[in-house]
Image (cartoon, rainbow, N blue to C red; front, side, top):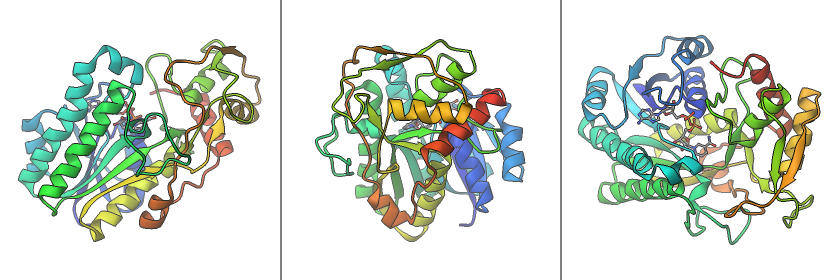
Length: 336
Ligand SMILES: NC(=O)c1ccc[n+]([C@@H]2O[C@H](COP(=O)([O-])OP(=O)(O)OC[C@H]3O[C@@H](n4cnc5c(N)ncnc54)[C@H](O)[C@@H]3O)[C@@H](O)[C@H]2O)c1
């Protein structure tokens, strides 16, 4: 594809891996980020891993003046829109911020893309749009019943993007619903670097194994699963990043909107992840069982067959690789 790819939120956990995957695939990535949940120190690492200078725009994705200038100054051919607020718990406390950034940011971006005549957009959505699944694995056609403010902002941003495409079929939009991204780049130069106490399982295991956090609380030991703990679809962040490169390639050939699950297509229980992580780090993870949390579900995993077919993409790195790469990142410091 001629022209650069703007990655909003490109300094964040998933965006940084996308930037490197794009550079390695021969694209010219540009990062736009306000660093509200990331660190400037990631930039030299992205340039080293990507093997090229990476232009940086420090801006809020809702800042239309900054967006307009960015599209004016750079020959942008497509956008990967990762910038957003992502904490399910925080969203309940800060609905205004979540709606403004996740929905308002997407609207501002689309408006400036429209002005600039840039039609290719890959959007970071989430499996949380589904809520309680009726069928497993979860297909893209499953009803959307998000249980959180965060999930509702993602569903609304998705609806908005599909509406845009219905009104103007020149848009080329891939809405990617991520299941549970985990792991880090195998170089251990980039990874997930939560500033507060980690909320996701794998970064939490990293901190516990490193002695930086106490024991793991496992919510529920009586779920209807093989070992009683909750099952989720963990996919390696590198596989996820490569899915975005594949989606941009797909959009070069196809107009309209496509909505795709990105996941492994099978689940692992909390205890299976704990055991895999113990093997990776050679330490025992202290854990206690706690009561189920309201709103949690027993099992949740993707039907990724549409992405496999349409993008020629498949999540191939296994749980052992996810844990080994996450632990390597933790041992390198686990933060910027
Ligand atoms: N990590 C997950 O488990 C997960 C799962 C499903 C979907 N997603 C989505 O993927 C995207 C990336 O998630 P992540 O895990 O990399 O999160 P992250 O917080 O590490 O990255 C998001 C980046 O966006 C930036 N950002 C936030 N608000 C901004 C704004 N208003 N303007 C400009 N930049 C802003 C942050 O500074 C950060 O660098 C998000 O949209 C998230 O909702 C994440």
